[in-house]
Length: 204
Image 1 (cartoon, rainbow, N blue to C red):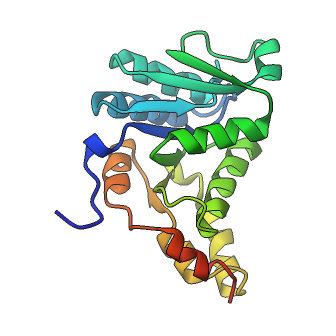
Image 2 (cartoon, rainbow, N blue to C red):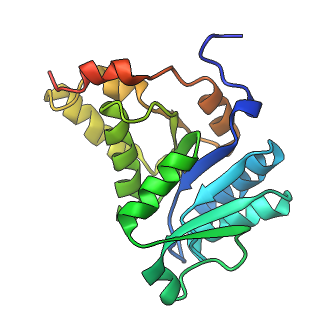
């Protein structure tokens, strides 16, 4: 076994960042549902934002369809608005958005970003920022369903070419896949990333 290869037994919880917006193209909902199924079938608990609509809902339904566990982490003000998903296996209520993100990061072994809006992008970029700074070394996978993240990836390439970002951070901090079936293998094969990478956190 490759030194960096993680077995499924090493992965207890995986965070999934994704949209809570209805009306998006069905290809995104289907991919979220499929990913939930696959992670549950592998015995992995899914941690997400506890939204009751959009990709979040479909992700959770995929997990539950395979008798898996899905834990939602959601700020109190969102619960008061009725935005939580009552079908989540467990719900953790936080006092702020910042606490929500920190709680999710602390409790999972890897992170996956699905298509979403500015909230999803903010979650993805915060977890990448923390990884760049050596605050965590957990695998990060971007599920590029239907090429959704292509403009984001192009922007990162621009950051590298204009020397706002180091190539190592573009090429080794995260993995991009196109189908849900590739997500778990990508996490298992992710390159090791420890606190020693903090020395490379500064830009060129």
